[in-house]
Length: 221
Image (cartoon, rainbow, N blue to C red; front, side, top):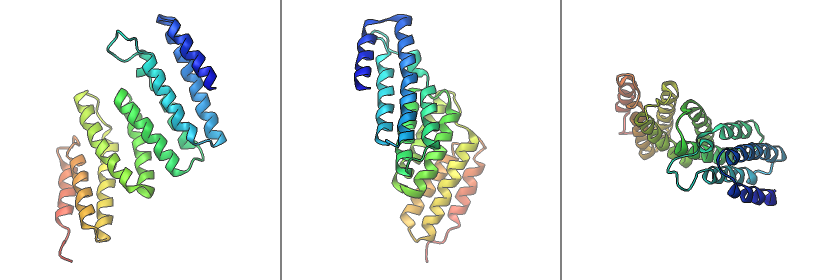
């Protein structure tokens, strides 16, 4: 397979225009099939490598004299397929988390056109991370905040239902920390939850609700 990839790169370098785009698009589809095969064979280390191959392919498709993304780079269909494959696989949680995080990072940096799908991946990723990698979950919450702000700047709205879910899930985890007498973590997570709620287009109703609940907590215990 490595030899095949080398040959494709050599061939791509000789082509231009429609012929080059067609070859890259077909090769991108082959990467998706390779990804599915790796998932079925449970060669988990190959998943991240293949996402990297697809990312490199995207870069190769951009003409050197054009300062913008190519058509292939802006098409996240392959990442959609990869995410669905890993979610349906028997991969361990840590593999699913790492793979989805890699896909989320790439799609966020490349294109926010299909933000509904991105939000769905984030919900899956956050659900998994909360049960096994709390540090990654916290970093993901910060990333959601950045994505929502970026989406507003690009006039693409992050799904309100998904944003509400992230905010309330974050606040519920803050309460879990409060019950466990981890006050520092509780305050930190509650602030993140209220920050997300403030981005809701609901006239700050959710923000006020979470704020009231937070202010109602007794800290002298």
